[in-house]
Image 1 (cartoon, rainbow, N blue to C red):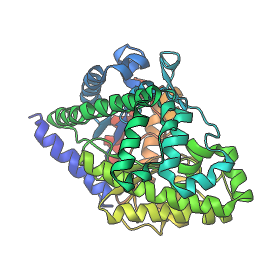
Image 2 (cartoon, one colour):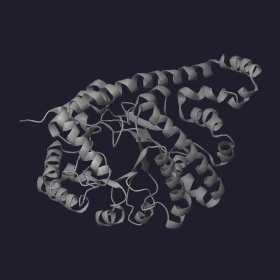
Image 3 (cartoon, rainbow, N blue to C red):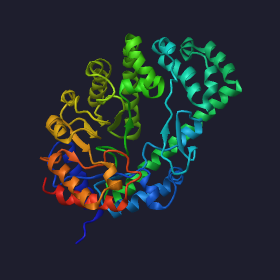
Image 4 (cartoon, rainbow, N blue to C red):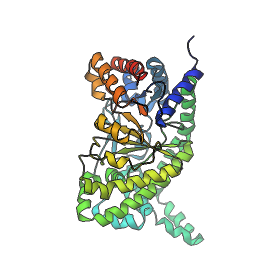
Length: 421
């Protein structure tokens, strides 16, 4: 007899839960993060997928049922609405600065200047509201006319002065733009919960780990300062020219990220935080620099989130071959690690008893490989990373351009070889 959705949901949830807990499940689970691949599968453009959440959800449900992974995710974080509503100049999206079938892109730059460090350290909130947001978002240029909000602590007289300033048309326009973003997300949160319930009714657990949806999004303190503020050129100059200010700014960033992530998890009911590590890998900085500017601040952020009952899911982009021993300092079975290019043998030996490992399957093989190559690499990962549990099969990067036929081969091979790991 075919299994009911309720039975499938229970089995898949246990399979994933066992892997996260470093136990050996009945077989290795597989997670598909479809992303823009859903557009190809649905015969629509990336732009249409992004603009129509109901259509995106219908496609996710249809193809989850077809491929039958243990977990299926769609676009999740990567939607253009907020950027479009605010006139974001740091990102481009399908149909918003890019062709309709191009994936989103970040536009890096030194949006925070070297001379801005003192302003940031003095009052990060003031700096963000009155300087960074007007620089980055066209629709928020009016925020530069805000007073320093801490003056409101003086009571009624300051409120009267603020009221006069709010009459400024450009400031009013910026506040209206923020209100539209707030309304969009107020409507999106219950919709995402409803979509999660629809996936569960089909037998698929939602979220990554625990909770509903992908959870919160956080950044390592170094990446916080480099990704959208100083840029790569600026941040690497800062390590040499103003290391004390950079370290002080990272401490501010860590506290900001911790508080914001906890608040986001509470708002959505999730207990998971996704943390992509953009500039911590082997090729970006020396071990001495890593020990000074990257690892201590990231480790503290992770531990703070764990203490708050949140499971950080870190995406170790690039190769972490030279840094794996640091990861042993993280609490056992309290974090997950998604790996891109790290040597799988070193990875399993170094952290296989510390964290649930996911990823490591080359997306390129799902684009240009042969069915036999896909099967053989699947078997290899099951034997190496899946040995004794604690592994979730997943692509090492975007699945946007993957061949659906090869994806099907991959899922089926995981079920075959993963049962013997």
